[in-house]
Length: 460
Image (cartoon, rainbow, N blue to C red; front, side):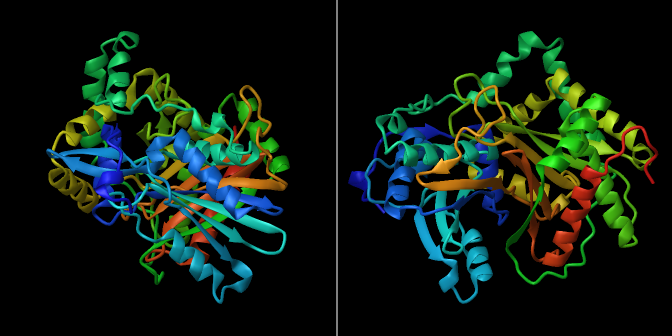
């Protein structure tokens, strides 16, 4: 690590969501997520290392250390070179490759001592490898994690051109919370804005709090204390069929993803002799202000959508309810109500914010049943669904996928990402709660609900 004299005085402020996620991370709820780029062909490690450094230069938040000054948290940009975040492993030479990868992905990331990201180039065999990025959620959200991975590929392909180093982070040296400012800017667009913000928070923390949401059944059969992952893919032909159903029913894919999650949880619990009352699903939403859209950052809010047992009797009514809930939430400006809540919380010192985070986890009633996030089409050209980046040098990009964090009361988080019309689903789960077989079974159940979702037919 650099000496004090070598450190830059440039800084990037934390917004309110950043601080709240740091508080969660500090109570042993790892706020880490991953982006995985599967490759076929040879990758030059030195060139990749330099490409990552150039991408960090383009997005300086990825080369910062969290500091405290006068009880205020900020990110200090480290200008000196020589710090590499890239590791390499040859799977064919490892005695236990699965354990190695799990250990690497679960390695703690201390934002006060290291950058909020690291990378691993894992050689799978003579032809294929995976480039795996770890991101701390207090510095970037899933969508922006994919943007950073794409910038690495662009820098690798461009021979480390000056364009890779030209991006300027408008937050550098500033103090304003861009999410709060963006929330305030919505007031002229929404009638009775502040009244709706207050009602939204009352609904979230009072009306929707009791009774507590249903949990995904688990028997604590797992043996590890860390996070584990499993992935599945819905192929282009199958995805086309799901898209056709959505189009015919005049709903979106996200509506089906949400409705299918209710049904998957209900069916899973029923298989284990458990009833499902109110299922509440947490859905991250992108609220990036203008000027921040292509900048690595953490610009998300969360919405919680509930279904009661009677809502799940008919799949057609369920998906239309999901559609109406999502539409109403955005029309009322609901994503911004939590920004005000996070901002008030972030004004407290970190030790107070940490105890507030602990309270939310321990009481459990404010933590939803499951988290589902969809970052959409990865690496697409503007206005097109064709991948803009299909290779790194002579290597071909086979797939791009990601993962989501999973806090203890949920135990499960699902991330969805589409690359080259392959719909990739990754399940993150607490290995102390579920075994790998159980996690694979639950993810398979969710995928079957998506592929076989019936619109206009009775769900049994």
